[in-house]
Length: 164
Picture 1 (tube, helix red, strand yellow):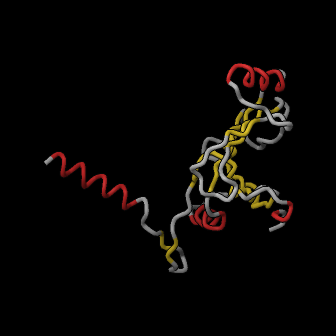
Picture 2 (cartoon, one colour):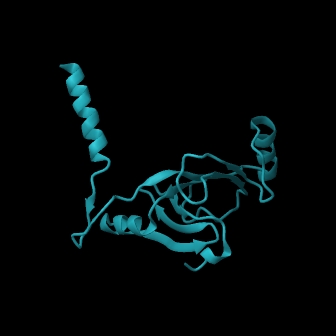
Picture 3 (cartoon, helix red, strand yellow):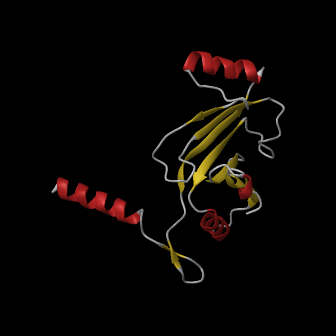
């Protein structure tokens, strides 16, 4: 009996994660979702280069010319082939504003328009965006704890992506 209940619970969880959401216009669409971490960014308490160098030396994170690292992985289906950005910012950066947190998580998403519709339907204020950059579209919101959250629909790096 316990096996049957466990089996039914697994089926319910599996099915519920793929059930379409009904939008306001009555159109059925698949619910937009986060597909992974797009980057981890935090402020250094001292010299950001020295801290980044420590990570390179001690943890083997190969630093790119722009000062951060790209941690690549193959499971993501985005056209950019997947990757995670990592970067140490100077303590005086305003990149995380208006949040007072010393970090910001960038989430990779699969559908910017769908996620915007979801955020608006849920009454979530869009802090900034969407913006189109060489590597995709970005949008920012503030979570209930006051942390700035970056949402990214990745694209292959191309100057033509700007303004789209």
